[in-house]
Every structure is written in C-alpha cells, then in structure tokens.
Image (cartoon, one colour):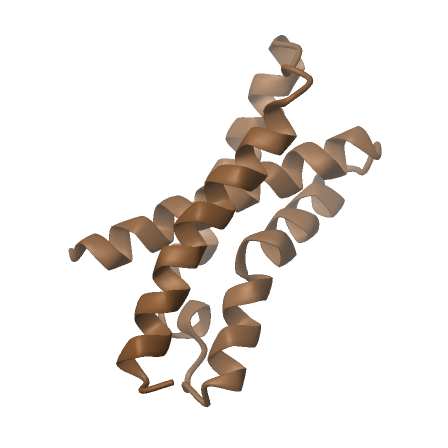
Length: 114
C-alpha cells in the first residue's frame, strides 16, 4: 500500500465524517447521511478524474473507497449519538480533508502532466 493511496483513503474518511456531520445537523435519516457522506467524500475526486480523463474513476475501480465512506459515516453516527460534537468539529474535518486532497490532487495532476 503506497503512501498516496493511504492518504487518499484518510482524506475520503475525513470528508465522509464531514458529510455525515453536516447531514446529521440537517436531521437527515441514515440513508441521507450515507448519501451526503459519499458525495462529500468522492465528489471532488470524481470531477478531478473526469477533467483529467482518467478512467475508470478511482472509486469505481477500487471499492475500498466506498467501504471507508460507509464505515466512517457509521462511526460518526455512533459517536454523535453518545457524544456531543465540538462546535468546530465540522470546520476541523473540512480543513484536514482539504489539506490532504490538495496534496493528492497536485500529485495526480503532476503525474498526468497538467
């Protein structure tokens, strides 16, 4: 397992947590939380892959991404059920996810010659 792949999974997990926190604050049900977590976690990478003409899209080629998203969203739901999240937890998750995906996106773009 390469460092880039591990960072990518960590970034997906962080953004899935961010999406789950946002969906939970809006009062969505379990399915809504999973959908918002999924879109939040892989939406930007999907657009990146489409713009760079990389096929198949990363999460279609490797189902580990979807497993990480679902596990992260479920863990967030369980955590929030028993603990009150800090007011800045969403901001922290977004900042960490953005930092990780900036590094990954730059490396992928460089490898693609863009």
